[in-house]
Image (cartoon, rainbow, N blue to C red; front, side):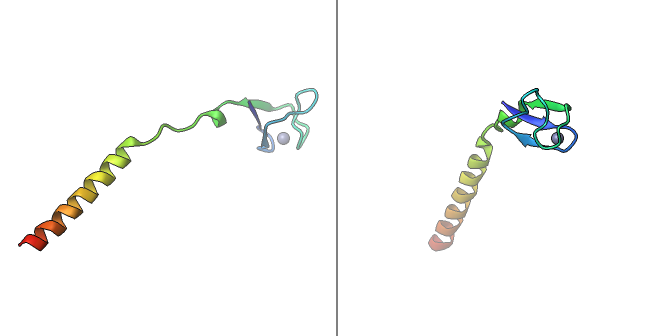
Length: 66
Ligand SMILES: [Zn+2]
């Protein structure tokens, strides 16, 4: 769990003893759960890359044959 301060934009794993911001002392601290999430792997990028490489190799072979 990470914390995010709305006042000074502090971002860290710890908060103060009474839940205040360790950087500026504000109580405008928010538990940041978005930071823990990771974006899903883009599998379509690998597919596009494979198709482009296949096209390039096919083009080279076609040029060699003709
Ligand atoms: Zn702060």
